[in-house]
Image 1: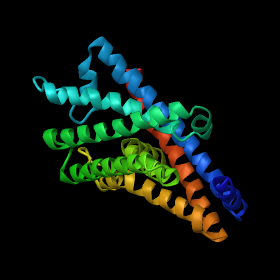
Image 2: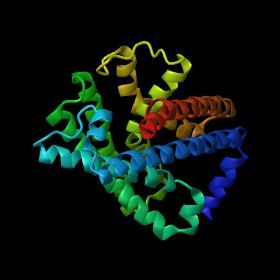
Image 3: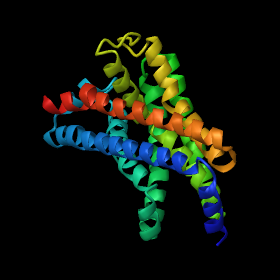
Length: 274
């Protein structure tokens, strides 16, 4: 009853409906984009793995399958499998009808998502420092992203065990944002590809241009900032702030939508057409 009363009061606040609509719209676009990325992983990496064409992986990755590096190669394969799980399981965790009507699935999917996020972070740290990932700046930003994922995952589990579900939900949203950093990274390039008509100034051959560096850090920092503004405005903001943040989120809808289309054109569809 307390939760329902709190939700009723929040819904009665001016601007709450617009703010909520902006979040739902963004999430819908993001979920579709993550499902598209998962489909690409399944079709390209899964398909080429079944055919034994590991060279196709190497052509698409900074450091792919390397002869003689059993541990590194196994980590790469596991990384792509875990990325598929993240992109499918993550969005499903935040669909209200699933959370309400399939509570058991929600709990198990959450556990799988959280464990997967931690594993993919540890694997990412290994690949970054054992194999090298296009320069020190990128290695540091990837490492920060991985550490944040691990910290947020611990907090998600902690608050769930303590049955502090409102706090648990907020940390789960933060975990979703940082765990989606690799996806945001590609969406950022897709956006830049379309708005610059394919010219993509500032992108270096080894991810060492100013745009590369901005995307490396911004791929998880900016989503976190927008999420924090949304959460705090939803709970405490006045009407003006709610309308302002709603406008910001609707702007993110446009950037994300353009980025998803651009990423499909730049990365995913060309690979599948080969």
